Image (tube, rainbow, N blue to C red):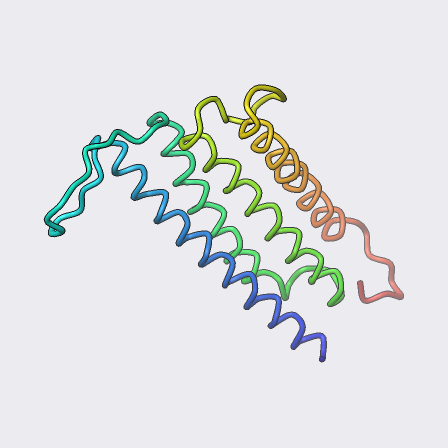
Length: 164
């Protein structure tokens, strides 16, 4: 497979995972809606379930927005991938790293509204909090490392004899 074909394949993966994250954001948005109205009901469906979903306003909003922001981030990554200063293998690694980062952050954010005391801000508490903590650890760590590597490759002085 040529380098251009490999890049296009990674772009399709990024777009697909971005679309899945946007779908997850929509599902979380319904959870947010049901939390706000205090029941599970959708017009014109003639039934409703009188149930207050757990969580807080901030937790539901955050989970919903994380899905939107991270899905769009993958689409942005797909759009700029051909411009990245990496060979095909580096672009592949970048694409997979971005997918890992975005999914870990969205999953960790989704735990907070569903399970009590699961914000993942510090180690300890229920197992769902610890899971969120470690998922954020991976996602936030990657979210710091990947842009730093991109900046370093883009801004470092270029050697005259390389096409890096």
